[in-house]
Amino acid sequence: MGYEIMEFTPQRFLNGIAKKEQLPALVALLGNESYYRVNVLSALTEYVFADIEPQDREIHRFEQDMDLTELEQVINSYPFFGGKTMVVIADEKFFDTGKNGVSEAATKRLEQLTKILADIPDYCTVVLSLAKLDKRLKFYKNIKDKGAICACEPVKPGDLAPWLKERAAELGGEFDYSGIGQIMEYLLQVDAAPLGLLEKEIEKLAVVAGTKTPWTNVQVEQVFSDLPELGNYKLMDAVGKADLMSALKYLKLEALKSRPEPEKLIGGLRSKLKLMIWVLEYQRAGISFAKMVESFTDLKSAQYQLKMVVANLRNGFTMEKLVWAYQ
Image 1 (tube, rainbow, N blue to C red):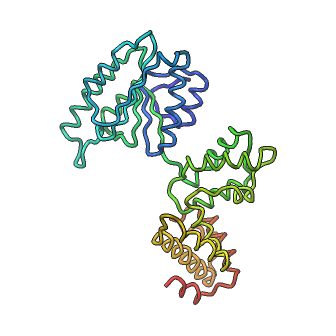
Image 2: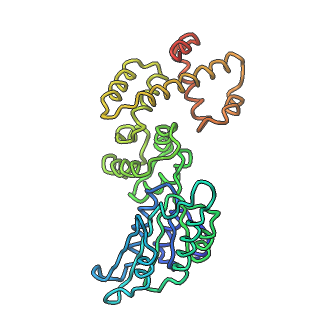
Image 3: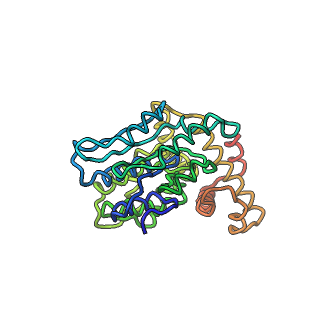
């Protein structure tokens, strides 16, 4: 199929590289997820220089104060010894169009850059690696017409399962349902999954647990240790289960961190207690679990979280205790 005037997901882009699909001279890696931008750029570099000796590879990076005259010279200068050139443009400030619409200066410099990128020589590949680029810009449309765009956006915890399965398969292993559920549970309170850290934890899991049998929630809990969300999760879980000794243990561990975040910790506890209060009120009012799930439209993974709360409320919590703790 090749790379044709469209946006790709990082995995689709990487699959195309692995299949040696024809690559356009202009590639844009756009989005806030640096994990994807770094990994795709690495694979892209290997692809571009696959048949080129190391001494014949030229890589130029423009990360700040990009000079368009210098950029044009680099792109149009034939590399020594007949090799290839890769130009990486990562100057975020250059693409800042201003707060009140696109400024005149931004329009002018983007027009200049568009002209430079309109005719890229066969020996050169230009890669834009940017956290943000306004899709309404004419410059963006030109990239889409002439090159390939890889959308490197963060992954929400609720959408993490396919990524986890792919990473496990790459290492020759697999998660069972409980293993994936445990990881997603750790990340319920965050907006974006920390993919770099997760990848390291999965690699650790493959070494410690092996790959002969699927990885369960028990193995995940034993091996995963470096996720910053993990300590808070375990503390909240202990509070929900009315497990005082575990709660004190994890509270102490949080306090011993080099950079403890008491505001975040207290906010998380209050959110947990508030949810328990609401669920108990709904139960007293005779509202069914299904109706309860429908009511919590803003709650991430509502059915799963509410199921946990209902189970925790069997540990002897009263409304008086919960309100006292919340206050």
